[in-house]
Length: 399
Image 1: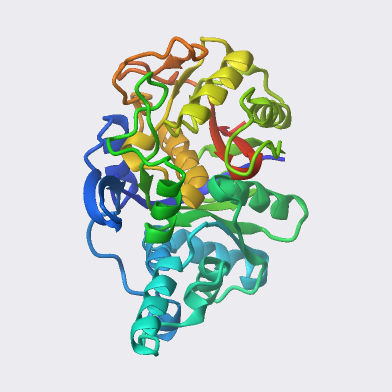
Image 2 (image 1 turned 120 degrees about the horizontal axis):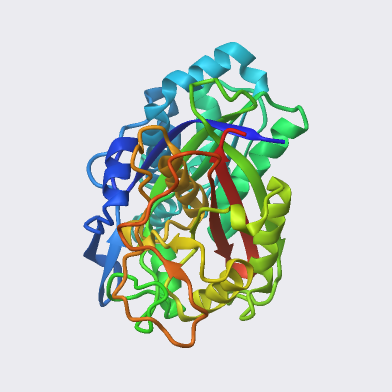
C-alpha cells in the first residue's frame, strides 16, 4: 500500500532547512566537506559536519542531551507544526516513531569514559540514556509525549532506509495512523577511527565511480519524515511507492562482488511498487567511492537498467552519513519531486570525470539533465551496508 511522506525536516553539511539544502544540492555544492584535525590521530581528513550551533534540548530532557539528539531535534523543529497536528488528529497512541542510527550518543559516552579513566568520575552531564541505541526514538517520544510504538533500527548504512520501510509496515498493519520516521547520525571518533582502521577513509573529497576513487568521507545529519496514509495531509504529492530489501551476508564488511544482493533489493522494490525498470526516472546511488562498493553497484545497476538511467551519488556533498544516509538520500529524492522544484533539477554527480574502464557503464548525471515536469515520476534510492544488508526505496508523485 502507498504511504505518503507529508512533511520533511533535515539538516546536513548542505544546510539547515529544505530551501538551503535543495539549493546547494542541485548546484553540486561540496563546500560543506572540509578538512579537519582531531578525528583520527596523525591524519587531517575531510569531514562533512553540520555547521553552526545546534538547538539545546528542552530542560526536562537534559539527561538525553547528545549531539545525535540535537541533530534530530533540529530537523524535527522544522516540521513541529505538522507533527503536532498529526498527534492532535490521531492521538498520542496512534503516532509511532521509527528511526535509524549507528552512533546514538557514542561520542558523549566516549568522552565520559575518557574522563572517568583520568579522574575516576564521570562528568556531571553524562547519563547512560545518551548512549543507548534507542535514545533517538526515546527522546522524540518523550518530547512529543507519544505513547505509540517507538524504536530504533541499526543496520549500519541502511538504517535510515529500513526505518522508512518499517514505518510503512506499521501503517499497513493498522498499528499506527502516522509515523515519524527517518535517520540520524553524528560525527564521532569511534566511527572515524573504525573506518580508518579498515583503510576506507579518503584523504581527499570522495570520488565515486572514478578510476581514482580511494575511499569514503564521513558526514553527519538527520532527515525526518511524517508518514501517513493521507495524500492531502500537508498538501504534499510525494509518496513512498515501493521498498525492497535483501541480506546476502557475503562478508562482514565487503559487499558481494557480483552485486547479487543489491540487484535483488532493487528488483523487490520495483515489484513492490508494481513498476518496470523503464519507469524509473532517476537513481540516487549508494556511491561510497570505495573500490568494492562502486564495482558491485555499477554491475547491479547496469544489469537492471543498462546505461539509460540518470544516476548520481550525493556523498561528495554530504559525506557518508551512515545510519542517516538512507533517509537523507530519500529526502533528496523528495526534494527533487517537491512542487517548488519547478525546473525538475536533480543532484549532479560530482567527480573528476575519469571513468574506470573496469566498471559497468552508468549514466552519471551532469548538471544539465532534468526530471520530467509532468508526472507520474519515479525516483529510486539505494543503500547498502556491512553484512550484505541492502535496501532500495522508490519515491514518486501521488498515484
